[in-house]
Length: 353
Ligand SMILES: [Zn+2]
Ligand SMILES: [Zn+2]
Image 1 (cartoon, helix red, strand yellow):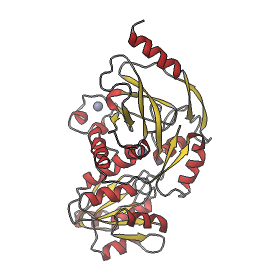
Image 2: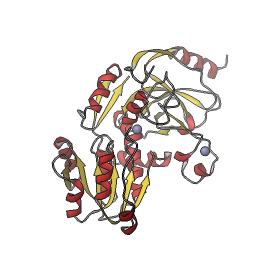
Image 3: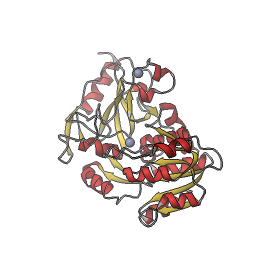
Image 4: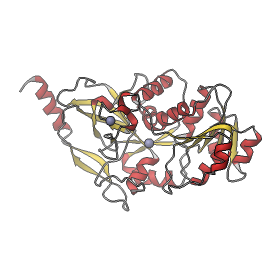
């Protein structure tokens, strides 16, 4: 055996089996158990997971909520952050000991028109962490070296985890919205995504109005830079935002079609509505007449590229963003899911394997 083979064999022995949270079917809780480690294929790496954020998408995956369903058994998690422990054949992009993030875009083709024009997130050949390939809800995870993003030194892995989806997704949504200095930006939903969207909108120069139905979340929104807040349980947020002059951009982050419709009605003429959340109820009613006459733009935004995530990490390393999160052991994943679903979590839960 060469030194590299020996190193590989010993790393593999350490991780021969590991604890992970597995979805066996869409109606049962996740099972935390030991699973066998896979042999690394060319281009793959094994990462010892330090932190793994719980995103609403993981819950939809575990419940099989969406038209395209994952195939059980699988391990959710697309906010995994950890240290590279083993390199598969041919890997040159990262080294053992590097701290990396394993985002939703787990693999792409590397050559289609989408990919080469800066839209790798639209690649039709893509594989997704925690959905079509096993994700970060375990002591170890397998990832493609080319699609992980290095976490700069100095960033706490428990901050890096929520930035890996919630951060990059809202950062990209604000980019897609085209927010410019002085624009009124309405952020609908102040959870794991919303608390970061508020900060990115403010960084872009926007004046932020945050909408939610829970007063504590609105208080958090103000602490993070929202200039105005509206409790949608007490008043019509669209009317309240129109009184402020109407939103130049509205970011729909709450998993309720009614909230998307409120976001639409909150826009000023020429405004842009960005669809980000994915409610299981997949329909929203938008009037054609007003959309045409008011020159409204509606755009969907899905996660972000590796470049977007690098920018997100740089902003955080520079002290420009605050991540609100709560750490729980991986064993409590089912309680964590119940708490997120009941709205009992201020922002993000990060699981510790
Ligand atoms: Zn996510
Ligand atoms: Zn492609």
